[in-house]
Image 1 (cartoon, helix red, strand yellow):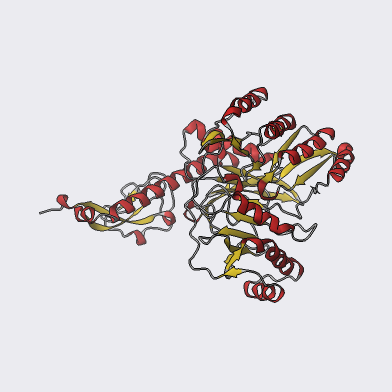
Image 2: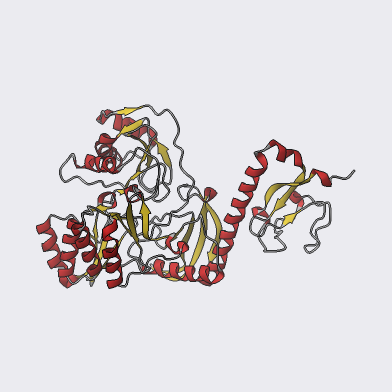
Amino acid sequence: MRDYYHIKINLPGGIASPGYLKDILSAAWNANVRKVRFGSRQQLLMTVHYEDMRFLESDFKNLGIFYEVNTDRRPNIVSSYCGEDVFRTGQWLNASEYHSVLDSFDFEPGWKPGLKVNVSDSNQSFTPFFTGNLNFISSPEPHFWYLYVRLKQTNTVFKWDGLIYTNEIGRLSKVVEECMLGEGFNEESALKAAVGERIRYVFQPSQQELELPSFSLPYYEGFNRYESRTWLGLYRRDEEFTIEFLLDVCALCLKTRVGEICSTPWKSLVIKGIEDQYREAWSNILGKHNINVRHAANELAWQTEDHNGDGAELKNDLIRYFSKNDTRTFGLCFGIQTRPKSEVFGSVLIRKRPLLRIGQLPLFSVYDLYYTENFNPNSRAQVLFERGLFKIHLPAQLERLCRRFNNQRSRDTLKTMLSEPDEAKAAVKTAKTVHQCPDCLTIYDPEYGDMLGDIPPGTAFEDLPADYCCPTCDSGKAVFLAVEFTRPSNLEPA
């Protein structure tokens, strides 16, 4: 018999009213719970001792609170509402529209999605787009949404026909779920045909393809100004919030007419709409509970699995390495996966796997390092960077991958600069194609060969041995990139 139970309470869209959250926290306090966490799908998590479980169950039953124990059969609905009125997007999507979407799931009493549902503003890069099974993304047409479907147990995403009307999202989600989970349709054409036979809903043709923004994780912690009000982002290094602190937060929200508390996929909280006269009261609460804000940006750009101390410990080790070596991580986010069927969001993915097993017991673990296509965390395509790393070697290889990203971004920027003005094109002349290491930028030029590697001049890159490595950083031949070598036209020989 286990000593503790893991409790999950969904906060649809990552939104909780202070009164509702206060009721949950008070019941947890009565069951001797002292700390809670917020999950990567914006849900509320807590761990309860088995002797106290009966008290919690009784209180939750009286309050009418839906919860799950040691399971996640009803995933939370994720939304980008936590970034609305926080990060500017210029979209038609506002608070009332988000609530209309969430209300559309209440058309049938007691029904809660069994598929993962994401609801996202297409102009933001704060919450993931495609980590759900049903991914609704706002279109340029007000009140209409793209739908991208990811079938169960697959990594393939396909676009649904037409733009879905806001108030139809809940009904359509239920029918798609019935066809996928109940009827077992797991192929695009069969699923679309089955859904079409079961439901008629409001939609309109899509006039243009979805254009997603380039990824840049906004800084989401501390006091920040948005128009005439302030918002507060709260992050905890150990991902735990004390109930005493959260009860004070709920009480102050109720006192100052802040109607909602938002959780984020980064396991943090956002409190919006703080009026100027109450700014000091919020600062006093942070001081009372010794809550620090303004952590380094590279510490905020991590996602770990829920209920996982190993992932959080590894994250902190890697952050300390980055800080010690002053590693640039701007534009990247990182995910740590220690369980084979879990999902984390990141442009760089660290996957732990057992090297040896005796039965079901893993003896030694190694890490595989991946990055997503173009380092866009919303891409479903993943590229292997290094495989079978021991933990002691992981930080250095992760830093090397960060350098590759920075070098790639620099090259892309340079290409853009050189391709724009015609005058600039006249000032340079393409001489030849060479191959460059993406990690240290060393160039292999066949005209000169590689003296250190005993490669004579005149050896084409294609003729290099398969085990050829960069003479500077030992990167393999396979990762070298073909680039155009240019020089100013005024340096041309007469």
